[in-house]
Image (cartoon, rainbow, N blue to C red):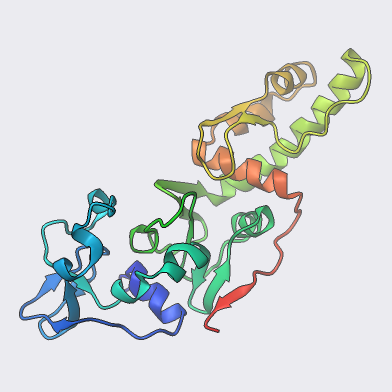
Length: 256
């Protein structure tokens, strides 16, 4: 399959036109996304953009730090709309879709697109996410960018873990009734700590759930959970918080 570059993929999905200030005098590559810039292609010198300014802090993520030009796909996405309004988005060949709520995130995690897609979620103001978000080619293993974090998900393992979480929560409720007084707290996930936008670490298995699993023969389920990466623990928690059993339709935002 031909390589898909993130800004070009986004621009095509949004049905927008490339933009630039000059035509390249020789073959090069985009500083930001790495897309090849061939002689004669439209582009913009980095000195004519905010790239060199003190407020631009994402230079370490640039694909070609020592090149001079920004491609005609990255430049039109360098606007307030794409740094804020569309900063939580799922992008496919069919358009740009809202990715803001737990339900949106869980739907993506439960049923990722079978065609190429990219997904990014801002967790701060004015973040450059599009050009440094990889395009995914398979729903079996894919990456979501959350701010500065790249979250890689193994889908089959994730869905096994979602079922394990349901079983462990049921074990916890039964264990609580046997060993405690009153009703157990309404738990939607087996993890404690962490947050949905990855601003803090956590997603440690709840000690009470571990006690319940030990008493209620939950060894198999705990083994599944222990095989998860930090990103996959986040994904299991998001699905739990959403309360979804199956994916729901996304809201299309672009093209308008």
